[in-house]
Length: 269
Image (tube, rainbow, N blue to C red; front, side, top):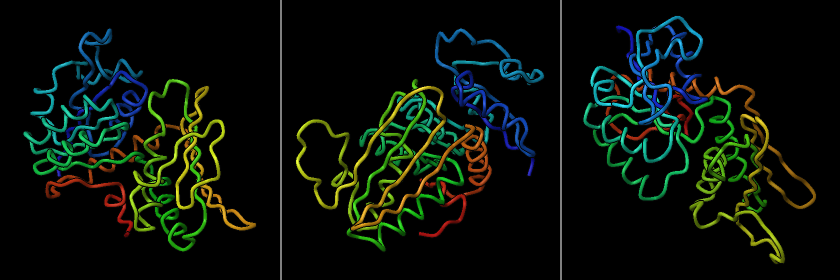
């Protein structure tokens, strides 16, 4: 197969810059486009120069149409409104759309499923190998220990705008589905004041924000006189970029549909 031409959305942001570097360093892949929001101060700059690499000959632009028309994949860690626009365009172009964006509404999710009728969409609240494996372990533990209380604690950098994190929701959903229910029916947010006793079967969430933390997640299963704690610490956001590039490569020649990182990694269940 010739080189996979990949467009990076949000290329001037923290994850976008990491993606430009990782795609450029990945054999068989090339950065063919770099997108940013209208009015962004870095528009017009070379994507390689922007991240400290040699010039790539790819200019940061706010027009996704020409970029996607010449690409085989777009990787997108942006915001829901941008991801929905890119999903529609990926559907028209019949290319792979890797979505690492979080914070989607139920209506947004429906639009992404609709786009996946024609695009190959790989979507996950976390693109890392470790978190994908963690979700499988959480599901197994939740099923084997159906009466244990589940609490999910996550921490991210002070600039993160959504809570709970997409990864925390991914882990909570894995636990809920393993018990034959829906997270939306069992989810319990941060507690404050006179809350009363814990409702049996709920899945609690706590979101911490501060500093430059890349991402930390702990799933606590608490039973009578014992606890099981499963966790993951992300030390470099490059792990998410590497997973996203792996997903873009995996998606080549796949049938249109909505996939997750478990599909990419071949994890059953």
